[in-house]
Length: 93
Image (tube, rainbow, N blue to C red; front, side, top):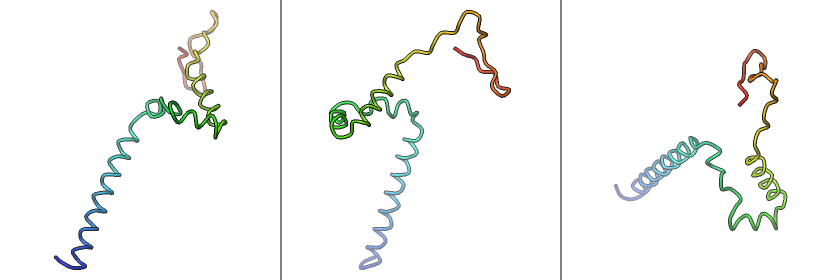
């Protein structure tokens, strides 16, 4: 296989291999929970640039961190330990 057909075959094999690698990376990344994907987002060296060049993104990150660390309110002593929404019982912890 020499000439043009050899080049076309090599390019086709390379395209198939690169597509397979990209598919494996995307499939693996899709299985990671969102909490793990973005737990360190916006921090470090890039966070300083967000604060200067895109303050709204920095403020959104600060608000997201604040809400993530906030605790849920405790139920009142007389409240039942569940809620019924459209026929589904949800336990409130």
